Length: 125
Image (cartoon, rainbow, N blue to C red; front, side):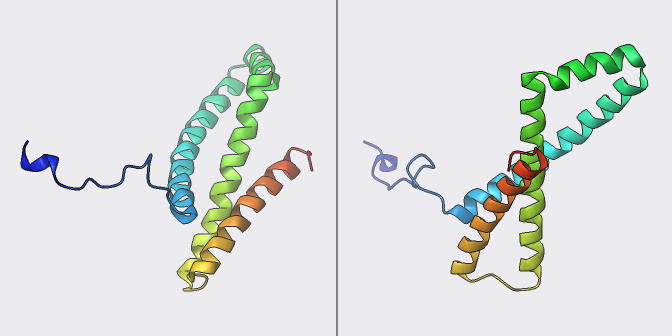
């Protein structure tokens, strides 16, 4: 038995439950990265539109399919989450809302606003 076998191990992420603020922070960063790829895809879409009527017709069929609508819905959700959490960070930059209770409540507000704005955009609310 080596000395490594007796030392305590740090809690693994599968065991340790991250606080909501940490989860929202990770999700905020991931949303930013995903939005970068969405912007690249938007440039590709604009290129397809510029390619002519046949390409535009193909793109319309793709975007109106179930997979296309699902992808657009997800992009809308990601966009609104990043927007709402960005506003939350701007409020924090004014040194407001940094108390633990405010952090939790603003997290729930961000989630609710994200869902509401997405549903309103898609005409589902």
